Length: 406
Image (cartoon, rainbow, N blue to C red; front, side):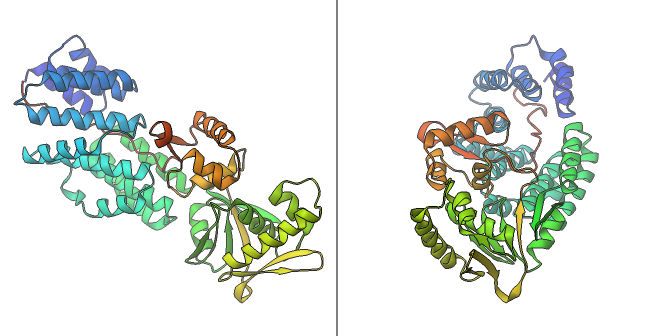
């Protein structure tokens, strides 16, 4: 490989795409096409990057399987960075096997991390955690160690495990310092700042205040009955009753929890749960039915008692009752709450859970997507929606290491 290609690869590896392009921008050989593609990816032009990477893969000869496999990995990472999650997993697995067969363990590990990152993006957090635990990061270069720890931190944050998140971010910071890649260092700083920013809002006894993630973790372990409006669930310690697919029951539980220890008039419950202007006899009958259902689903955690004026929520063993809400509640909050469980939802499933038309839900998703609060993958009936995982992970694009075959 000539010196210009080697120099361009080194520039990309240190996060200098413009410097790399100055060296190979006018070249059409396979290694240069690959490097140009990765430079464009680092600059954010993903369509052009994908075109160049595919051209490079075709330009490498049939005997250059190693280089073609690295192009596949680069294309998978470009797809990941542009949130195109429909790329074939089998192709990435085959490329990883080829890289391992050629002794390229660094890029093989990178391919494995791309698969794990995809699991995180589509909400397979448990599978991602198991895959990460099976990897020994000590033998990897600093950039990959940083990615490894950032993924662990992101999963810990989603599971409200503050100490684990801080420990992983501390290790990520040390690895990023060794890697000397500004984007990775910036990612660690951004993720660390999330732990010191308000993560939720506590509503209890008529007052409210912001909570850090560590305070949310303490609240969950305090034994209080928590109506979690961030994930549409009711929890008491380790016992969690999900109500994401039952919005009426969750609304009733939240209204009762906000008023605790007082009761809530029936007219207020009807207006909040059914969005009715007046609590006529038909709505009151429907309220009795829904309250019966709420009693059944919360039977292990609390009682829902009728009073002369309405209904009151009473936690078992006399524990406190509170509501955990988003720091800022906004339009389409119900859609965000359903997606906050980390799983992917279709628009039809969201419409069914919310009791709304699919067109109404689709408009809400389009607005949330435009503000980067939700993201989707797939097309047509296979399209699924989810909230972005936290934190986001900078793609490292390790392919720029010198390519064989020239």
